[in-house]
Image 1 (tube, rainbow, N blue to C red):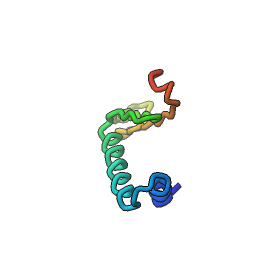
Image 2 (image 1 turned 30 degrees about the horizontal axis):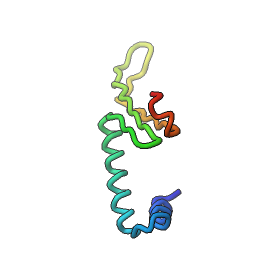
Image 3 (image 1 turned 45 degrees about the horizontal axis):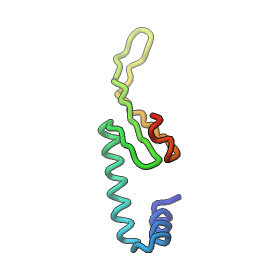
Image 4 (image 1 turned 120 degrees about the vertical axis):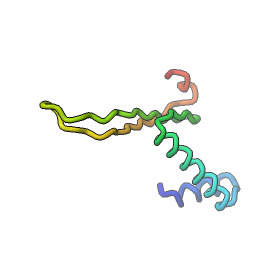
Length: 85
């Protein structure tokens, strides 16, 4: 689904002007992006986003050097499962 499709669907289903939906959706995306970039966990209804920062590693005889990496996991869950984690 494209961003345009998402905005259109939310706008149609909730009788909210598309411009308003677009502004809110862009703000939400920026907030999620900032959370992931900072490594902060984010809990939303039915969704949990967890980012793990893997530190850089210098080269050794056995391993090549590796830059710092971020791994982000998105978990979907039912409303009654949200307290399971």
